[in-house]
Image (cartoon, rainbow, N blue to C red):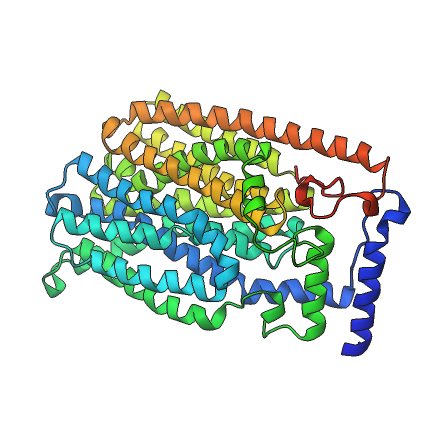
Amino acid sequence: MDEKSHSNTSDDIEKHHDSMGSLQNDSRISLVDPSLEKKVWRKLDLRILPVVAMFYLLSFLDRTNLGNARVAGLQHDLKMTNKQYSIALTVTYVPYIVAELPSNLLLKIVGPNLMLPTMLTLWGVVTTLQGVVTSYKGLLACRFFLGLLEGGVFPGLVLYLSFFYPRRRLQWRISAFFSAASISGAFSGLLAFGIINMDGIGKRPGWAWIFILEGLFTFLFGLSGYVLLPRSPAHARFFDQEEKEYVIAKLKEDGATGRDDDVDGFSWREVGEAFKLPQVWMLAVLFFFDGTILYGLAYFAPSIVQGLGFTASRAQLMSVPPFAVAFVLTMIGAYISDRYRCRGFVSMFSSVLCIIGFAIFLGSKSHRIQYASLFFSIPGTYLAAPTLSTWSANNAAPHARRATAIAIGFIMTNSGGILATWLLGSLSPAPLYKLATKVLLAFSVLMFFFSGLNTWYLWDQNRKKAEFRKTMTITQEKPGLGDHSAWFEYAL
């Protein structure tokens, strides 16, 4: 198909799309070109996903490697108390939370191809500097700037992928890059086990080299991001014109973008609308619970394992298998969620895994059984996070409303991270972590409840929209309604 004929076809599609109301039913035109369908998504998966996954792996690694450094002697060398360690973690989260919403709102304006690599490069420098600190105050300064620069990464990457993939294809891709978090949990332990053997080289302790080497790699990869990340499908150099138009048409058909560029532009009104969505706040509660569990396990897994009787170096290695299982389960869950469009049920299943894991850890006195419990709790919470992220991105439109909804979710996630740093850091003594385990168990139960409640609410809204569509056509509906439109079906 030449460019001219395809352009004519695209015009016909738009005219056909705009005349759907005359059909007086709730069906949408299905734009499928077999010659392009697999080709365009495969190109995106090969060109975009590996870069995005590496961005998030480095983000999670550089934020949570403090736990590995702690086991390797950082807390002892800097003469930090448990309370001071919790403060160091909290100092990361405060600017992290503050940066999330403005960062997501600026992403499309500045351009993700510029903003994301810049953040990555700069926090790579800060991570490296952590390896040369000699005082607690120096560590606090580094943690503050690390949080400020990393704050927009996760919500920004979720929003960025929604520029390229239709809603029903999104969770597998979000899980693919979020699974980098579980990989980083495993990789961090292996890497720390090897790096701490550099203790004494350059007159620096082993924990310092964890920061230096990982930070330098982050810095270098950040520079490569300026070349590797396209701004949008229309700017992707690896697409020809036909492929660009096909992806854009699929996004418009799906409702992932507005049919009018003005509707998908920035608007303070749409920012405000996001705060009025019930599903945003039910998910916000879920994000808070999952964030507490997620960051509690991410930061303290090496310490938890060490408390089960393992040496410091052995604890680094023994923290790897549960995260490896989490990676596999996350990808399986993502496939099922996308294939059967069941975000809520996958979220409930992940909650059940967490309930089982924390109940076993709390009820058993055997170190082996307590270690085995991590194979439920860690995979459970790592499966929940990308599911909730996709659920949030799927059910808010247009762009500014979606960007705000995603940012609200991650603000709550990292607020949970603050609670986790205190809950496991100083309020609940190691090695039993009894209070923390009880709280995390209660949060897991509440996650199950709110997942079910949100699923029911969205199902009920879809039912009402289906009834409404019987009484009018799409051309009679007020434009610019976004997810309030009767023709926008919520993802369950």
